[in-house]
Image 1: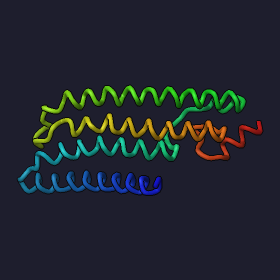
Image 2: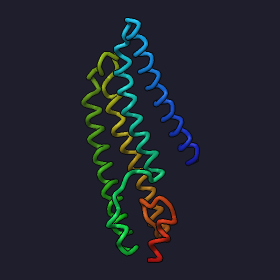
Image 3: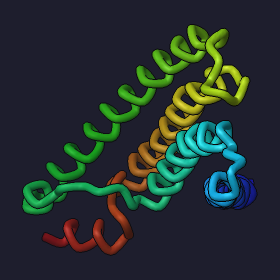
Image 4: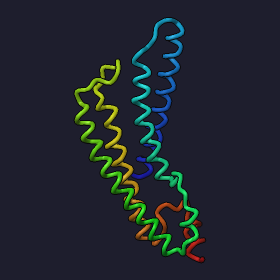
Length: 167
């Protein structure tokens, strides 16, 4: 089941990126030919917001987000695990708050029209609550696994865990 969701996530990201590239490409060609597609740039911007959250979910799932952990790596494993879990919980809470306020923003923007596209601006702002909710769920699942297996949440591999358990 999880592999199907990952496959759908990857496909969705690829389709979004392809659509953005095609929209910008055809907009440039049309503008050069004297027939500007005004709505295409608006649509590309809207799709880019969704692509950012799709990429953020993939990066979180692969533990590929940037982290400055110079000082944390120098801690004993128990302390490092505590800091790691605390940061994960703080991040889940932040994402939940972001999802809540993103939902409110989406509702407020339901009547607003996005640029020249004629679409509701809620289609753009809707990426925030949905993306933040998915990020929070993925991170919460990673916290659960880390607690169950007594590992780190943000470690890129088991080797990161075992190296510091020995120290």
